[in-house]
Length: 421
Ligand code: IFM
Image 1 (cartoon, rainbow, N blue to C red):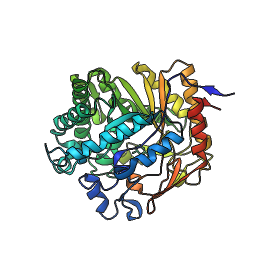
Image 2: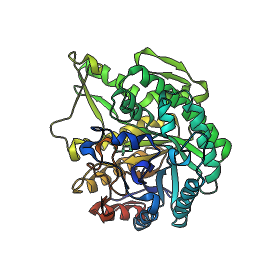
Image 3: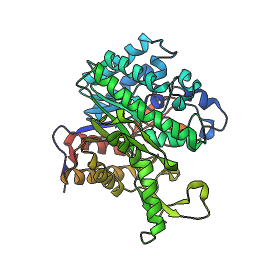
């Protein structure tokens, strides 16, 4: 039986500026890429998907997919390459892109910070620099004022917790730190920066809808009958999934290592919640692993895995995440969902199975208003470079030729019908 979605449901694809624009030379990631060993196989973003020159080619593909929405981000380092110095031409190019989307009947959802920083912010300590809070808010306010006639739908920060874990605790993303103290400092600044940016956006555009995109990855015990596994999973689940969002509700950031920081200005700074869902984590308690807080991740032996074992295909985790996130009482959008699957043998069923779970959540009363598949076209996947292919369209970065994978036609039909055939 088919599943219909509510009228006005947003059907989109999601991207981020650094991953698709190309030539983002003023960004911290541009330098990071040049360091040996940082990106698998020494890959470089280079021209990426060439959006800076011709994003419109992909906007036309969005039309072919019958999308009525698109999620994209802006690159702070382009707009403000040096402190206080604004690049008017870059601003104009972004406005041109937004006009291009609107002219095609596509509503833009724009992320203001998606992983990258201007070099001048990184040089001052990146997210560990106290000044990032007013700097991000000033940038957000200025850009939103310029774009207000074209965009009223904003995400302040993409996946704040997951990104900071990768960048300040695990050392996998720029700036490659492995320090708990740096992570906690960055986390506090991120909550404060979100709150300050939220207010700056609303000041510039009172009618704006502003949210964050949270990476929700349910953490479950390997042995459901083990109290230690259950205790560990519950603790990790709170830290990675709910700690940040709870801080925006209560004004208290209750973090790792017993920290409790009062951030009263964070209360009530979400108009909606973006949910980025890829997979779950299964954890077993293991006394031999003090360095990973006694956690040993496992994958069930019969799991279906995406390319390079990036993720276990687990659609039920999306339903669980939506049910749990419902407690915040906010409209929700699935702002990312996808998998690397170069030969597209899993993606069609992946899309259908995840959309079924969203349909079920909607039927249960979860206010889910849109779905943005990650991603339209293969793009530069951070430390994995060009090795993971998330696109509905395959991209050859050398020739910029795009080739539809079978799931593109399937997704087009879903968008056209506003539901599953
Ligand atoms: O490519 C990333 C994106 O930048 C953030 N969310 C997860 C995606 C796939 O790994």
